[in-house]
Length: 438
Ligand code: NAP
Image (cartoon, rainbow, N blue to C red):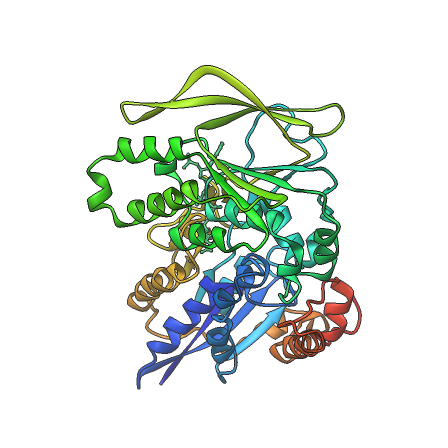
């Protein structure tokens, strides 16, 4: 039996699905010993810090992750950061296979004047703030004005818009961070607009997410019936052949015709608006947009310009990966050939293909890369040096350490009828995780 040692950097869905695919390919001749590293004390990546708190079903995938983590061939090294505590070259020296599953954590910028005014933040900061990521506790988005604009017509924009627009008691029984729950309860925001630069037919939302909007208890949803009718007219026969497009337009069409309930809270979806400038005296006050039209299938600017009032601007226009020493960052992701970076080094998930797809997309993506890994395994495993010889053991949050954090959070949540109450401070996470000094 040959035992290959695999380092997976990043304990999010792509990392865990890679471990799962490796476990599924154990034979009588070979097995795998998996060490998973994460810079946070807590695993689960975007399932913990990205998935919206009012989407608990999506989080149930953690049961799969916990099963993998409970296997004897798995070790967790939390609080270990690539480039700070360990380098890719160290991993390459020790492991037979290194897999980067480091995601794409930086929000893309619009690149327009005024974007950096106070009151303008990226979804890449807003989402981990409300989800209790310890690095984002102090983001403090100002929810003190009436108007919020979310730029982007994808599911992240939808999450941000929905969370801002719903009545906060809908969040009381979720695992949203306590600090965010408090701020949402005091929020003055009553009018949220999600803005797409192209038409409804080009929106990247998915229909289940659209169909959730009418279920918001105390929020009225506005979509222009004309914009949807025009889009349906433009797509013509494609409506029959393209299932996802049809499902999206049907969902939006129903909402555009629905009777408004007269709620104080409003959520609007607006299309064909390109942001040109963020305006305001010392902070965000308005956003200037070019009104677009669709001509022969192409989205082009018209001469019309509009300004919308805005007290909070969130940009949700995609993500890119941070630079990692030892690999090439190419257009926001790690340069790779179908998941291979170089001999023995691979990449999976958003770091590989960019920020696309739902959590489950990473399962098939990781399986494909694992097939490649298997076809390229060295004839003989490397040897016996253990990574613990290179690491300060005092710093590591192990799987047992994470389990202690997990139990603390779940117990604290149960007292209030919530799935968990997240620990959000680094020092508390490390101390619960068994790290004595920081
Ligand atoms: P996305 O789906 O790629 O959407 C990005 C949006 O930003 C698009 O509407 C895009 O418009 C727009 N955009 C890009 N650059 C822009 C610019 N300069 N100005 C104005 N708009 C711009 O990305 P995402 O929303 O970040 O989501 C990432 C992935 O996570 C997606 O696959 C998504 O489905 C998934 N996700 C899933 C869920 C869920 O299942 N509930 C929740 C959250 C995220 P164009 O199309 O015109 O470029």
